[in-house]
Length: 485
Image (cartoon, rainbow, N blue to C red; front, side):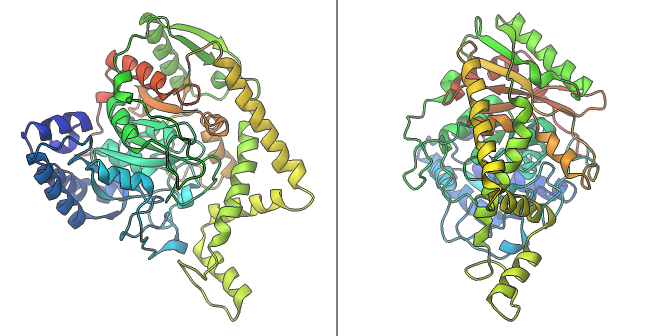
């Protein structure tokens, strides 16, 4: 097995045992990038020189017996997360050439844990999309089938992990943007509880929904990464001052007797038959392992898409008002202040971003705020209450992560509503602020990955890790790798 194929925990063991060096692992990943990145196109920027320097520092620390959790491990970062001295664009022309002067808190924590950052990963512009086709710079391809989407908006992160272009990656999840691409690419992705991970230094899309989380090859790797980046940050007013448990300690716990809810609304008409069969087979496996599986209803689930696509664009409209051609990023002068505003935003933003700004501005405008935005916020509360009631009885909920396997590139590009509906099973988790994970649970007859989604109550990520690892231990889906070479 090549070094670029190793999980984080396997590579970490080899590094600590002096079987390999961080520089060797980093060179293996960089060689893999050189070989397959032209076809996958997961990276917007590869920071090879900086990575080699960090790897050499890690090797020196390893020689001293340093035991930091990610010491010497090559990871990638979604390009919506600020990295000091390295261009950060959010995959938008309006931020082309923007060089941050500081690291986001999650990047600071990666570096403090000894991680080697390989580069910045592609995404849908400002994280607005479900396929990573909305990037202003390139389209990322699914490593399992290069003619299909890798999911979005963290498609670059998921594709990179699946293709061996990094050992793990950071993504962001506003309406499913970690879990949905993890499902599409056959890897593990977890969206933590809102407030569990700092958003300081993360370019905002929708501030009450955005959350940073890891994408990795297996559940243990995801637990290691989340343990590194989680925790209170006084620089983020939405960060919750709550102790972070050892997530790896939740792995291996007994699942017999755990009560699992199967949301009726997530198995409704429109769900792809192969996806439904794979997830129900996984639920049967959990029953065989001693879990108690029962159907549960989340009656307001049908309103998730409508509520999300009012709340998220409204917040995006406000957050993106700062890109005006004056302070930073693109500037397109046009004879005056208002003209410069208009020209800069017209040239700098792509079609999907403009669409969401227009929707958001409309729903926040006088006469429509109460009819749309306020009503959506009330529905959001009802959705959260549905989950609160469900978790009075169940330890976790299990459902498909995506209603269909990854579709072909360009298939839904001209139909925004069809694209939005690909997130229908992940949106409620963000609206309710819950933690959720996607793990591989099967493949279609044509070899495309299928993901199973696990929800738990607020700040109960440990329950997710326990259940996910128990299922993973009894199956082989997570061990499959795409045959790119």
